[in-house]
Image (cartoon, rainbow, N blue to C red; front, side, top):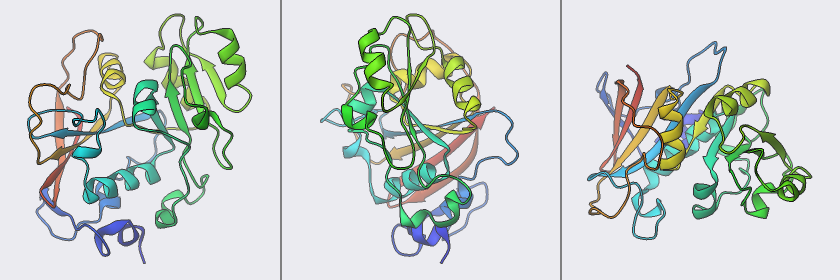
Length: 255
């Protein structure tokens, strides 16, 4: 049984390709494959938005926008990644913990640890203790600032890898350099909107995987980019579009 079948194309949600070549029964593992022969970090963002552009539901979390196909794609993307990168706010709100091994990943992680580590970006080191707990396979990586409380840095360093990546704010370039130094080139960020805005403003984003959920949320929810990052524009190219159970799965790459 292939990894794609395990991931859900046969036993769960089925995907059809709309672009570039229409087809039914699409393998999401193949559809979301990273470029081969990477020599630098490739930053892929996986985000979900409502049909009217909202980045989270009434609870302040993304669960209201998700669906079985969306969770299938998320599982595939995590299985392919070398590391999962998130902002501290998103890690707290969404309840991030060290990634657990999944039997459905099969050959996706051949030659690599059973799980990708979580890398969290935090200026204050306000991170849930469970995320810092020493897991069996992959220690959490914490990117923080020189101005973060020294006692919190020392405490986190007992069970996690702590990297100072800026004075008063974490520099996107320093994060990617720190991951590259650990051989982690397939970088998956799941946001949130503030972190995505900072990396996009630094022109560090290579790919955006956007799930468009068939819901209307109204004007209260933020967009998938938000915060105080400098204003910026970037051209993207639509590389692929899938559909499953009413949700669209759009894959954009640098224009």
